Amino acid sequence: MTKMKLYEEEHFVDSTKSVWNYSLLNDENIENFKNGTLYNAYHFFGSHQLTVLNSTGFYFAVWAPNATQVSVVGEFNKWNKKQYPLFVRLDKSGIWEGFIPNFKKGDTYKFYIKGFKGVEIFKADPYANYAELRPATASIAWHENYKWQDAGWMKKRKKANALTAPWSVYEVHLGSWQRPIPTDEESFNTYLQLKERLVPYVKEMGFTHVELMPVMEFPFDGSWGYQGTGYFAPTSRFGTPEEFKELIDAFHAADIGVVLDWVPSHFPNDAHGLYMFDGTHTYEYADMRKGYHPDWNSYIFNYKRGEVKSFLISSARYWFDKFHIDGIRVDAVSSILRLDYSRTEGQWEPNEFGSNGNIEAIAFIKDFNETIYRDFPDVQTIAEEATDWPKISKPTTEGGLGFGMKWMMGWMHDTLDYFKFDPLLRKHHQNKFSFSMMYYYDENFMLPLSHDEVVHGKSPMIYKMPGDEWQKFANLRLLYTYMFTHPGAKLLFMGNEFGQTNEWNYKTELSWELLKFDCHAQLQQCVKDLNILYKTLPALHQLQFNQKGFEWVDLNHRDESVIAYLRKCKYKKDSVLVILNMTPVIRKNWKIRIKGKAVWKEIF
Image (cartoon, rainbow, N blue to C red; front, side):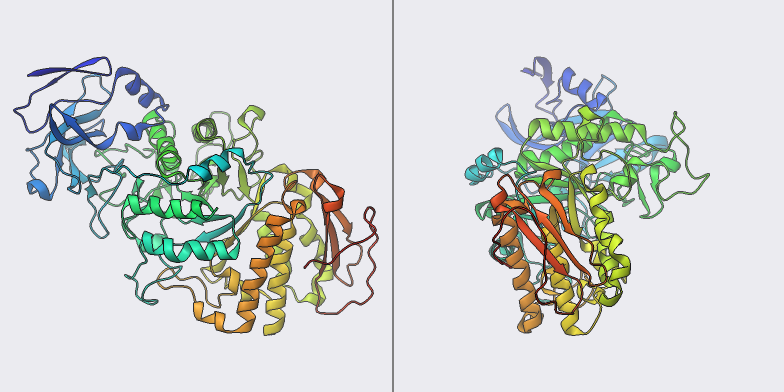
């Protein structure tokens, strides 16, 4: 037996055994983990390559509070349940841990768990940094020391103010943006190929940011990543964790920020995942009125449990810390906040105050936002939240939830409804067009035309527009012009920029061949030009979340459907006048009454 000191605690290693009783966790770590405040749990849980007593191997730690036995198994030991047993801590934390000498990087493994009532389970590591390519489900022991090249970007990011800077986001599903073989479901560009192809395209189009639909490991392609099993692992579909970092580095070198989709609202019931992790409801609520999502056939995290809070907030923090991301978009926030989400009377139970808010989930969201902005003050957290829940993007010190921005779903629905009307009928629906400014300043809004609007029979953007082919493209150019000159950040899903003619299909790439037709190429050029305007004209972004940045100029020509507004910044001379003709009728010698500048120059 060899006595060691680590984190001011004594540990005893028996070097004659296959697993050494060794720990990275001290009493303070354990207490924070149980209280939901261990925000860097990825430093301690999962698998970590270490050298102990001159032996290099991997340390393992997993939380399985109702287990009676836990061991590390895999191809490396022919799935022997007894050979590498982990030690349970005596502090009743439910943590099992140990060091396995000579365990190698690249070895696949799972945890064998003998759990509640003797149930035997094989689970992937919840904190794994890398996983096998589906349909295989094991975790991969991994260790890397990537050398980042983005110091200039990170320094620039610190000086920027996201709420006064342009945010034009290109939303991408990495598996179907382009494919080496366009119609082959198994043909993916790697992270390194995407570095060579996607990064230059986003740069050329003028977007300031890219948002990647979930890249955290997930088993089923058809979930688009929204049913995840690997909260600390970029999917192996496209390569290794280092290669994903290289892709992010390349975006930063091109002055493009990276936003990741993150799904703390639910997880699937795959046998190797979090569901019933140790034979009991470890990560999810036991009461299925709170613990099950009927819409997605998935399970809801138990936000009341400190260990689950530590897991989730550590997951978000991990991507900022280790992958240098610039923002995180939180999926399905409405379903996190509301106990009655997608439930009818009798299917949910009110909270202790008799209302529909999930009190511990609200506390979790506030804690998440406070932690991220404390540790990474120059990034953005963005809520996908579709209801009228107040103060989503207001600071927690003001009673808000603390997000930096919120998707403006009302704007999206009203705008698409308005543009679907025959132009000659739009005069009857002008209020639907102008209504967004009635509530715009309630939140810091991002205007989304996302993947959700071009699937499940909703039709691609171009076919939401009325009229013949010429009118459809003219309408879509008009819609995008309105979007880019309306206050707020912008988000456009891939393919929308050139008029994709099919609904998005994750199994095939976008229809790039359409760009040989002038109407599609001209639409793409229009979006490129709008990005340039948005980035270079201070009036279009400097006060985009400030009431001083917008003024209606003319809403009184309903019959002609000509609408005008002013975008303003700190200097009056840089104001931008926007005049939108919502019909195909040409208006000559049109007069606009406006105070301020006497001479105006047409720029678009």
